[in-house]
Amino acid sequence: AMATFLKQQAVERGGGTGGSAAWHVVVGRNFASNLTHETDHYLYFYIGQTGFLVWKTP
Image (tube, rainbow, N blue to C red):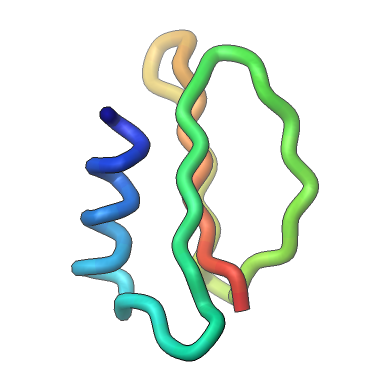
């Protein structure tokens, strides 16, 4: 539910998705990542013990 909400907000506020570009969101307590993202379209933070990763693919 939280990841879906954050993705909707990213699409609405972050320029939407054009062509093959897409927003991605991961929310959880234990995950790893290896990804490619557009310049200035990457956000990673914690609130308490929950991690939030949001990025837009080129």
